[in-house]
Length: 289
Image 1 (cartoon, rainbow, N blue to C red):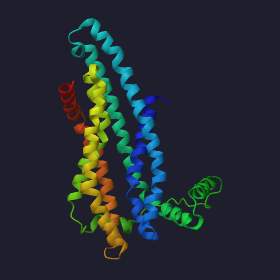
Image 2: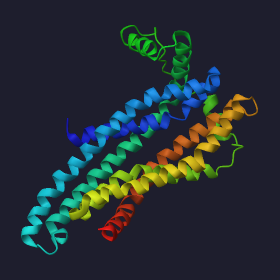
Image 3: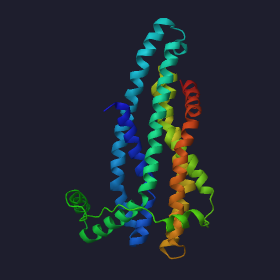
Image 4: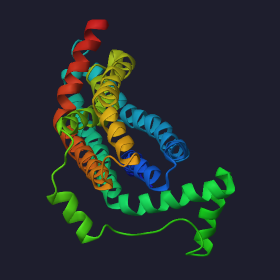
């Protein structure tokens, strides 16, 4: 399999899991085991974390393959301005295209996540109940694997939202203030581009590309701060209200759906801000260098 296609698939998988993250709270509310739901999701998130550890070095090696040869050729042609040569500009254009292709994987994974929410909520609720009976994560995993050999015997269920539920979500008015959705959009767009923009900034300034890649953590941390400060508290408040019976489950469904949609638009906004963020990191790298 082509390296770039593999990175695309890893990116799609990571964003699929990220999109399903908040859905685990709905399963927790339905089963009455919210703490268990949040804790068990960590097991699922391990898979995304592992994919993330593979994604980063594969992306870095892709960048190195593209720019190293072009930079060496450019040095021979123009030692004083290697990054300004036609050869190097062509390499940057190729890299730009490939990094945007990886970002497309984020959009595809998010769309798959939105489609998978109904199946995930039901299956995850079954997994929580199975854990309550067995008390063992390994036994729950075994039951899930058993379903591969004997369909219908495990916890995984494939289903779609009914048209009635979807209509209620789309046409009903969300009582929670919508401001957190815009913060989620900004946060997810920054999270989508942080590593990719860092790599591109490093390609624009190859003499200090390690510094540029490390600078990307500024963007990544900014996205985390926005999410932790402006989005998660709203989600937690509504989840608690639904668990206490003060809010309807439909309100939580609306929030989960609209947050997933904001994630999707965040990946698309990432395509827009990718180069400006890379340029900003390029300037910071020059300043620190």
